[in-house]
Length: 264
View 1 (tube, rainbow, N blue to C red):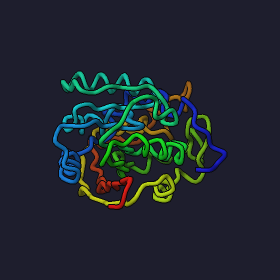
View 2 (cartoon, rainbow, N blue to C red; view 1 turned 90 degrees about the horizontal axis):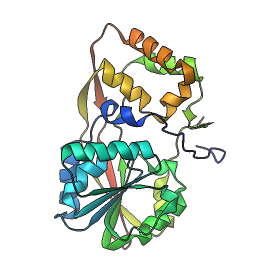
View 3 (cartoon, helix red, strand yellow; view 1 turned 45 degrees about the horizontal axis):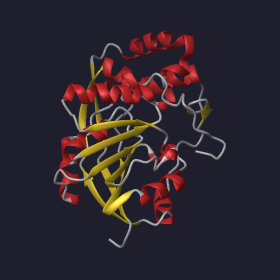
View 4 (tube, rainbow, N blue to C red; view 1 turned 90 degrees about the vertical axis):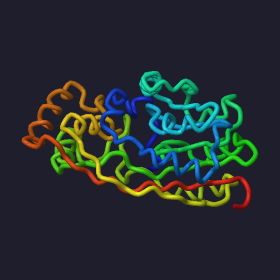
């Protein structure tokens, strides 16, 4: 990611309805590990920043009195609300704001999470805001995870045929991909750590429909990027994936870095 790239509201435009189906769900073991590491007992509040359709918010919500998912994409939040209702999860609230708007009067939290989202933000600004929103003894968690794997070389090849060789992201491009080096950002904001825990990787089986949904769930191949050629792209993708009916993807393990506001 370079300084020339700027966030815009089209980053995941049209992706919300594909996300939950196209991405592998976080495993239950992740919630169990969070509870064990942090002694979660159903008290306190959770803030999931850049929550998308609530993938992590809903997994952890039962461990808190209240869970708030914040995202800049209104369609993602509508999907999160739908999935919460479907699951019978009643202690979630969905806030349509950018992370840069924090603290946004949301109060203090026992846990603030960034799961596959921190790289999209003005990181120093958001990290500093998050630090000020933690309750006494609160923790900020950076979740290193991948819930999507490209299961066939035809996917990358076809996306590049339609969208070009440089990775797209909203109205801009990311020739070098998204940024890393978040540890320095957290430390500069006054955090200490991290303490890391991990959840093992796993194999997931994906149908063709799920693979297609996974492609459209990505910022680099969001539906709006294809314009009037979206249906044409999908038809060609399905043709290239045939005759296979299912694919197996090996998802890497999940690592969670826990950052605190005083020495570990």
